[in-house]
Amino acid sequence: MRDEDIPWSELQGGYKLPYDPRPALAALEAGTGSWHELWEELHHQGDVGTASYVAVPRIADIAETAVSPDWNPFSLAVTIEEARLDTRNPPLPAWVVEDYGAAWVKLFGTAWRLLPDAENEELLAALFAVLAMGKRLPFLARMAHLSEWERGEMLEEVGWG
Image (tube, rainbow, N blue to C red):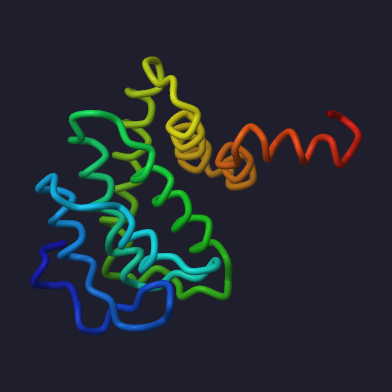
């Protein structure tokens, strides 16, 4: 979808307030931005909005073209997708379905390509979560998305640790 076809003024972020992610995404693409704003604006306590969905294709592009692998785009995309599956969040608008689906194909391919050389725990968790989500296994994605410490705590609570 072309930028001019997107109703930017109508998009909402995770706070259910108007949010246009283009400046933050452009800064990241230019190598001058930080993921902090997108984390803050696109997701809030399990809530996402249409701006979150529209940002995912650009997030996938950033992940694919990054000079060095970063866990942020993968983790943020998984966080948005986990929230999208929650019925309290808005459905994916029909006009973004195709681009959103293509973004997930791209995220999956990029995660698969990066996996053999990944060593950082945050990156590995994010890559595994993308792969699980890409295979439509949201509970496995959620488990992969946790830190090793969080998984250990959960296992200890049920007597497996």
